[in-house]
Image 1: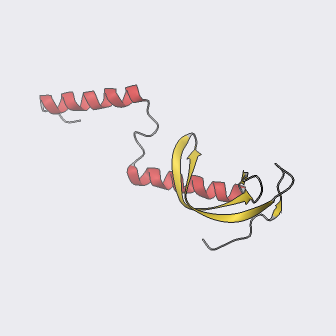
Image 2: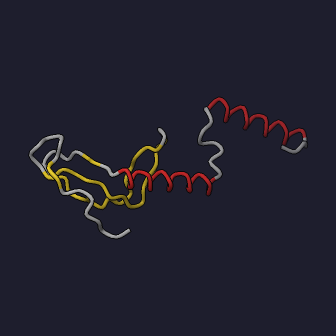
Image 3: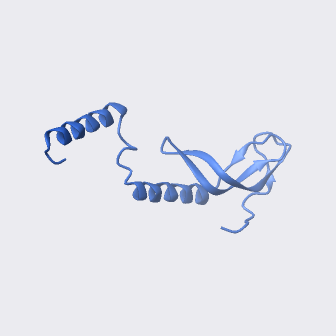
Length: 102
């Protein structure tokens, strides 16, 4: 994604600074409550108070990247509780020990 002018307006948080388009490498965020790192994100950062601003188009792009990353890793364990994961692992280990398939 090339450099874009997405912002360039007076910061609504402080009223003093200008929100400027900033390209951020390895931006740490959360998607649906889960930690996610965006390889390259474009956000608006106020040059005075450092408040961060986002466009709906950019955050939608991040969601799409998140869901694609789940498909690559199957995403199976991501939406499970720790107790469910332990139960599944124990069941798998029992079946392996007994020689039956999972």
